[in-house]
Image (cartoon, rainbow, N blue to C red; front, side, top):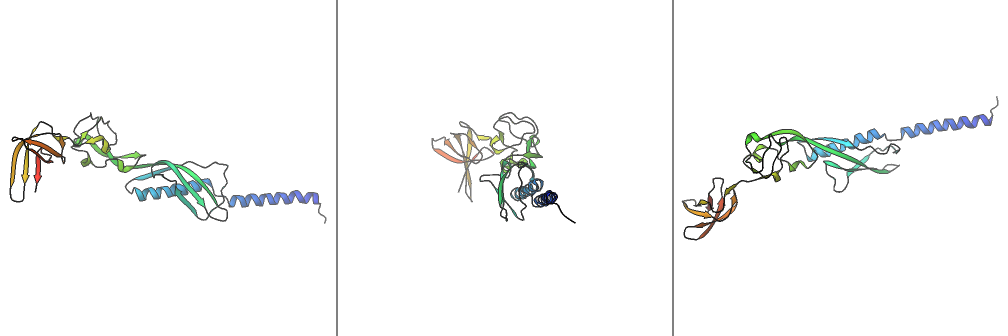
Length: 236
């Protein structure tokens, strides 16, 4: 039996071509798996940093034309200044026989219980228990920037209007004034064995915990710590 070189060469190229395709397919890391591994890594890091919140991670897929060699051990590293909320990028590196590196853009939304307003509040309203509620909410900012318990808001003053359903943050609220300049107040001097009080006139405004000055009837300037009850305390 004889073989024609003209017929053998095309067959050989065809076999080698199929073998190359099979080897290339077997040694290429699917983008879907890369995205899943990157998302799992970010979720794990988010759980470590914010255990009371659930993380929803969206990864921006790499260019579909990109072919990445398989890698036994991928290394993930957040970009400098990247946060585990909002949008940023994640570095991915393979140090195998065929090393490669790329960057994946991502968005993380954290979902958890935070404090929301139940109705529209005008500026300078005192927050009452019925004005707030704890509900699940999707966040794209730092969770520690939000209030999470009613006690953090009840009794405080709204610094600006707050809408129903709006997340509450510390910068929206302020302590109400308990003492106003010109107001008659009692200043209390307390020691372990006795308490003495006298009336004076407040020289400045103050919230609970402030050091406030007042003027006694004899003209002497005194100062004490403002209390929720609207008195000034001097303790020894």
